[in-house]
Image (cartoon, rainbow, N blue to C red; front, side):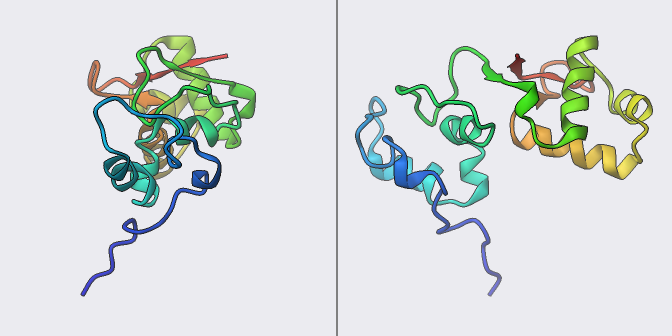
Length: 144
């Protein structure tokens, strides 16, 4: 039987998370459901959690933040983005408003597969999107 890599892995931030410990209530959603959807699903669930995405940037998590997407765009301190190529991609998209994958590859002198992998990782983090105006990539966060 194939092992499911995401199921049963606890979020690395759960120990200090007020949502995980029930100190912040998410309206009309049981704590059991929150834990199963976000906290205990491995990276796939974690990347869908707003609190987790803020935590991995190193920014302070707002006290009342829940796992669900905020109504305003998440703020990312560009200087705290660890990966230099991802940082340059974010800057390029901000500068131009939107970019095709080919623009990113050419301007940053990346290989096709490498460019695809970096963009895909930024999509998984939900820092960029390509659904608002396909096939263009645009920022899904506010850079500071």
